[in-house]
Length: 144
Image: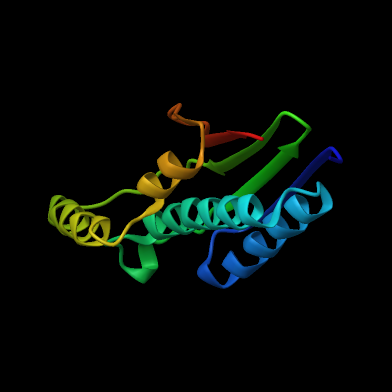
């Protein structure tokens, strides 16, 4: 197995999902991860990034949306696959009426969100770190 340590940073918009997916696929291919494991890792990272992008816009009016960059750092060695997905926190202000709509939309979308389930099924470790005013960070590890 070949060690790989690469990063990509793109705007957190749905049209960039294919670039995050291709990047993940290139990393696991370069590291010579088995086809079955590579497919699962690519799918799990794709679901996580998709969920993060969706959460940026849930229930917001177009004028309120602040597109954040998402950084995907993949580090693979002979022992494990590690992906760190980071986004900078940008605060936005909303009215009380908007907050109720935000909660309703989040509940509706959660029904279709497979990312947590997928990550827990595929990965061996899943850690989420939130620090107000700093980057939110999701770290996932799969021992190979």
